[in-house]
Image (cartoon, rainbow, N blue to C red; front, side, top):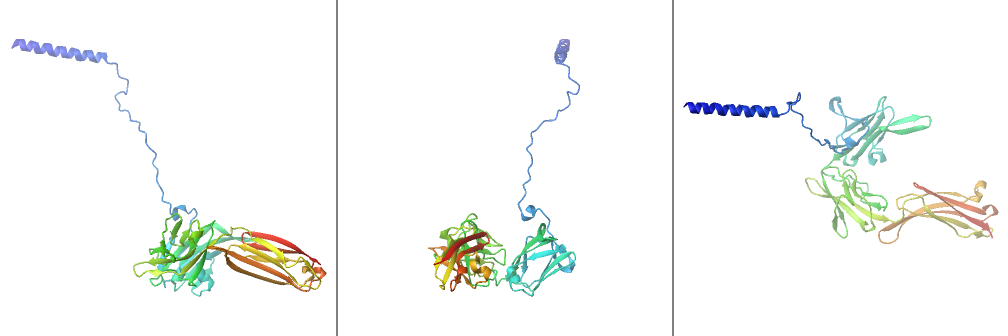
Length: 371
């Protein structure tokens, strides 16, 4: 028994000596060494993705408000949907406000529309609305000085209103057939707009009978505009129509004749010729000024001629027609003719034709002398 007690004491003493020796072998700890050091982590920057909505991209606040029931006001959404027959009142802040609204209201001077200017705001009221009133209503403030008035881009507002009518899925048109020109250098729109934004709309070719898919690249559907050909091509010419369906029997739009335009955009491409450049005294002659241009671009002609300052009587006649120059190619031929009867000495000289469109002016001249 004594032997086991002595052996245990010796074993404990050896263990204590080993622990003490290891403690001496360790270096002394620096002050604060026992504190837990914070871990350094590389964090990725947090990026918040913003949805590109109309409200997000709008840099300036809208000046438009919609008058609700019981005298309440609210900012109208980018698109509103109302039932045909309802009335709407819009207001825009400013002492000089200009309005824009669907063309049918302006074209016929519709008595259902009232536009007034008050001291601090402009007011637009439309009563007994119809499907044909579907479209964009916009306003902007005018800045005026001694030189005139201009649009203030920083103070404007707009909303697109659908006046829904189950009997009229498509916005009514004044005709049963429309021409749409396909320009190779700009998008073309087939304006089969609907009155119900949720309607399913498809585009169809009449011959050969087939559906034209809106792939989102070459052909895009915009509920506020219709189908858009982004880069029109000659093979897209022909007769098309739209089909719409919204919880009921489908409806068909009017037909659209698509004509491809081969003439590039720009000032008039004009030529001038005379029936005769040398004329005998007492004879008659004519000068022809001809322009080949885009089918939907009008041309204005003005003339300068030798006998003008003497008020020499002349006859000027302007005309135009569309010419088909091959399958799908259409050109507008505009012509102005100045005619002079009973040639006199004062009629000799240069006859100058100025042809002008929205993109520029072309001036040509030819000389007529006495034979």
